[in-house]
Length: 433
Ligand SMILES: NC(=O)c1ccc[n+]([C@@H]2O[C@H](COP(=O)([O-])OP(=O)(O)OC[C@H]3O[C@@H](n4cnc5c(N)ncnc54)[C@H](O)[C@@H]3O)[C@@H](O)[C@H]2O)c1
Image (cartoon, rainbow, N blue to C red; front, side, top):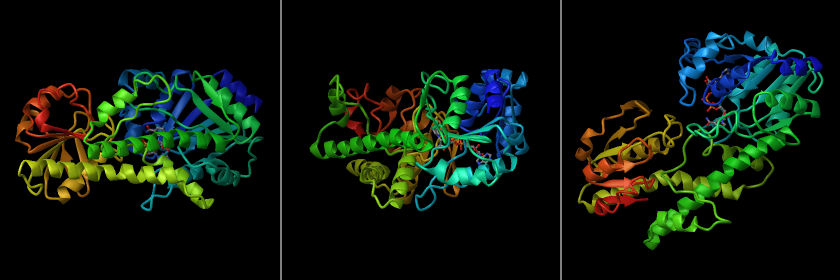
């Protein structure tokens, strides 16, 4: 272990990152910027080629950051698992989705673990960053890696450190976001603290990998449950004839004991809709039903249906049938100012509207095209906004001129309060969630 720690302190340790997506690529650049020779290993050839061509495909990493790292040889990429054998530190950042029955799908981690097992060597530090359920690292990943015959805490070091990256966030990024770290043994913890201590600004050590896994799930369950609560408040306000946004903004003036969350058309992204279900699944194996999680999931997944019902009602008030109506979805990314459409509620809303016979188009300055079922839709220009029977604002990108939307659109359903500053001018044709 002393050799590994010395190598890390001298910045001579070689780092490999398995999975160079939204999490892995920023981590690669951070490691390389700190002076570590870093290799991104990914099965997706186009991503590897893109890194080698010094072209970033992740919004938060500009070509200006990527290119000098690749040119200097500090950062490279490969589809060959052999690069794992050359690394002293391996960080796993592969996806952890749900399967069709909404259960954890650890297939990507297990595939990465197979590659890793074949190249595991003495004095190697392995860090799992992919979100997973409490116990996964200890109960499933550790036995798999130990099949190599090497002993954890002596020959190699296994840790879990949840990734907290918030794509599009200009203030908090990989380096300055406090990093929770947990080790399988005290020596494993020492190894990860030494490694990340050289690169990241603030570490938060916890007592085990299980604890580190649970921290991440608490964070995202907290968001999912609070969003579920505020979505239900929006439904209640609608029934009471109250403006949800006015109520939330006024409540948020309380200087203590209240935290502002906003309702919306449903949850999106790779994390908030998925991670809490990892926790509730784990609890089911312990014969406990995580009721808050299930309820929040129920409310949040119903929101796209509510948006479609409201669109239908709004059209109905204009003596228009949904069947044959021209509907423009404004914004399809799962949150504002990014291009990620994974799990975006816009996709559900489009399918539901199409199912009712609407002719659906979309405009999103960040997402040029999107696959919906068998078809690909392309972003349409905003110029013709006046030809649509209804515009549904699903994602409130900052670079849309909502004054123009309000002035030209015939009818708007604003699920994000994006038109709050223009509402007084055009109140009659703008409906909110
Ligand atoms: N995206 C976020 O904002 C975010 C934030 C916090 C945590 N996370 C978690 O981080 C993990 C990664 O998420 P992401 O958004 O970066 O995913 P992603 O899909 O953007 O990237 C994952 C990459 O892993 C590659 N991959 C999959 N299996 C592989 C294998 N066996 N070997 C090599 N490469 C493989 C894929 O080709 C892909 O490029 C997930 O567990 C996610 O829940 C994501």
